[in-house]
Image (cartoon, rainbow, N blue to C red; front, side):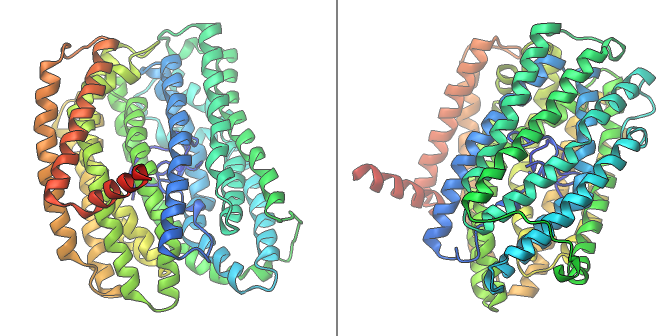
Length: 582
């Protein structure tokens, strides 16, 4: 239900979620990854509270470094290509591999194959070795065929996602770039499957760190582009063959190296890749029954993504914020979500799956309640920072190279509105994965239909009612509304499945967090107003505003959290104090 552009890092799943990592759903992963890195599910035997916390910490550190370098990759590409037509064309072309990957494997891997691998690891005499070999064989064949077919139909994808109001040169550039990047489907899928096999065997390091190789390659590509061609705004017709081959080929090379970097880890955990073609032993009927609903989920999300890209493409044609600016902001959103919420969800997923398998629904509900309170308490101050510090963040991070001052100004309202979507998105994702733990892919798919319909209605309505300059922010607002609706609807349905999920405690935490966030907002606004810099701060001024304003917001929120006794925050503070005391 993500509604974001593919960021190639598990980045966004809905309306699109990206493959590549985040999940697509980006960021450390390619701009086409899923929004939640479910491929990093802990092994079935990891069900204890301490183990969940330890795995969450390990994945948070790896995700922090991975997504940090991934964001540097985004900044490098933004500086090289700019926020105008060329940058928008690259962003649009990069969504295609993610879209096809999600149709084929992304959502099914997250909701179906991961739980099946976990069960086979528990029940099979060879601990799921032969099953994983069959699965990898089938997936490699399917991904290779899909990559070839996708390259062949690249013009159709361009027609779907690029507005007909754009010039022929723009659509031609999207088409040329997409032909180079569509083979990412194969390497992204291979990387995700290997990560799943490693995770179910208790190995988390390689899947968390391999995307860094990808990011380094793409950062180097962007740097080489700037060194050879310079960082300046150009029109699509000025993108020569050499420019296209460099940025498109470099992006593809990064994903290929990421997949190759995971192969040594397979041998380390004792897995031997043997080709097995007895696919009947996979239980394809069961996989198909569960997977068809995830396919429905992805298909509905893609409809929403087509709408978003067409609207943003129209806005871009009017010289307003387009796909690249929207995607940059969505990556900021996903970076916070991935570092915090994904780590929590991934650590809770095996616990909830085990509880569901044993019929311990009260335990599942308790984990769900704990996860909801935790992601809310931890992500709220980050949302405040995004809203209050939108201007200095936009200028400090993106105002470089071919990304102009006007591009930075256009980014500000998009980021401010995106702040509203952060917590609802994380909660809606947690509830979705609770259904997967049951396991149930049908309900999330059915919920996604009205959610995407609501999102599209809000986005089209805002686009029609306001100027093109508000288009990207309107897309974010539509996302926020749909995430909130998804969370409410999912919570209501889950209550009927697992019983009470502690809504009283959740709402008490919400109220306390709201008070803390409000106080932090007021202090942050006052501090920023007193600091030097206007609506177009220099790099130094914007960095000072981000550092000082962020410290003021974080300190105020932490102080109020201690006074209000927000348990999810006080527990962390207490743990840090105990460790420092040692």
